[in-house]
View 1 (cartoon, protein in one colour):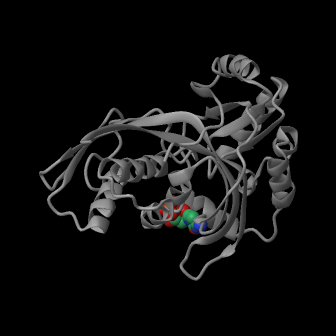
View 2 (tube, helix red, strand yellow):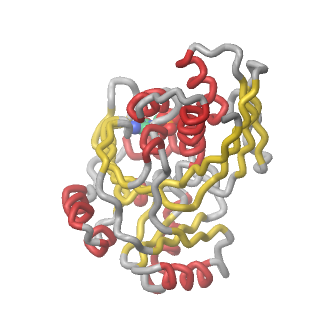
Length: 289
Ligand code: C5P
């Protein structure tokens, strides 16, 4: 097989906690993560040029070796010791960038999965996760996606049962947030409220959507920054529209609300899109390995 089209799903943080700092300069995290069916499309054509090229519909993204999808392909070929192989990647972005939705991480993971299939390399998922770790903290999660607990740098993973089917509305305010800056700001805080990770884990294990929705929580939400006002406004609107719970994802600024079903989510998306341009109604998803 020398051609493939793969889906790269967005991720949401159902809960996000920062529990400490690490000697490597990163932070200790404790997150419940969920992939949803808002996705980028990654087309790969295998070549024998030794070059990895990328084209994307999003003109602000680097279209050279700085692009994380190119780095992923390079890491995969290096792992196999392949010097002669190359790839032409066409990336159709739908996931907003710098939005807390893991778009870049998911593109990288999709490249790893796709090359593994195309080259029949049969690297186990744990190996793909290990390669992903060198590319970014959220890439290992995106390899298998679905519903997972992520601790350590965010790369120590435990696979959980899938979330019950539901509708989710994601809304991204029209600005981006600096992830390192938000981590710096949280360091300056004395103590902060933590999510009920245990309670949410139990709710996930029992398949109780309401128990999950009631515990959605992100410690970055309350850290000062431009995202805070927008998050509060969107959350309040989502709740008015019938969301069972809401939270910001990652370091923002995207905010999401969980609804009982897709009809309610679609109704809320329509209402919110009068005010915010980037609104999506999605459902939980998991990539095929
Ligand atoms: O790993 P990744 O490149 O996605 O991380 C982006 C930034 O987020 C890092 O440079 C760091 O500032 C911050 N980060 C962190 N601790 C983590 C994950 C990310 O401090 N566990």
